[in-house]
Image 1 (cartoon, rainbow, N blue to C red):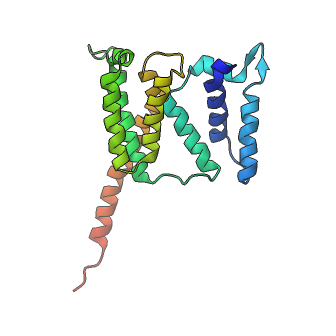
Image 2 (image 1 turned 30 degrees about the vertical axis):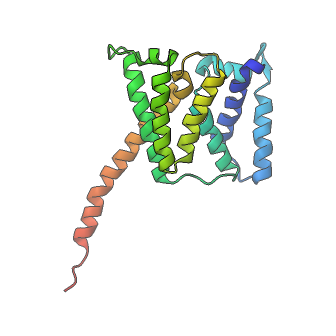
Image 3 (image 1 turned 135 degrees about the horizontal axis):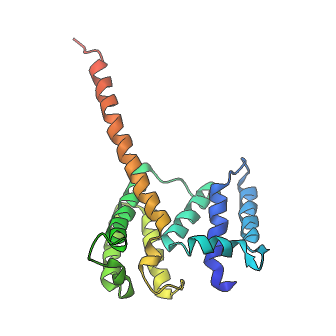
Length: 205
């Protein structure tokens, strides 16, 4: 079970974030999270529910785990929800990493950046620069996600020896790109409406 620590934690956090809170207070929400963690150990045909979920999703990236933990902390009232600018900055960073890694893994490029994850010193330096940029922007969530992913890699907390598996998984990759595209569409859609409002405003003599 110790080897499945991430699967149990992911199961509990994901269920806590996805399921409605029913207006419970902080204490009840905390108990609900603990209950979901206990449910993750329930065995069905010799496999825990967390192991079942892991068989479909594999271990998520540490960045995803940190993001889920952050959302759970917001739900519990322990942290404030991030501003839109903070979310957009983080989406840009994660989408950029996604666009660097995944097109090549799908055979769309001769470059294989996934191999960089096995000897990741240049990649760690790059991520460090990104984290430093987020630090200057006071984007603590982004710094935590990248920093804890790097720390987890250095400690070997996941079975994978590849640094990329600590940084990205398909879920956070798709979410980052989709959310960033959605944000861009909303910004573009608001511009004509804003221009129309300005034109319709009466001019003062």
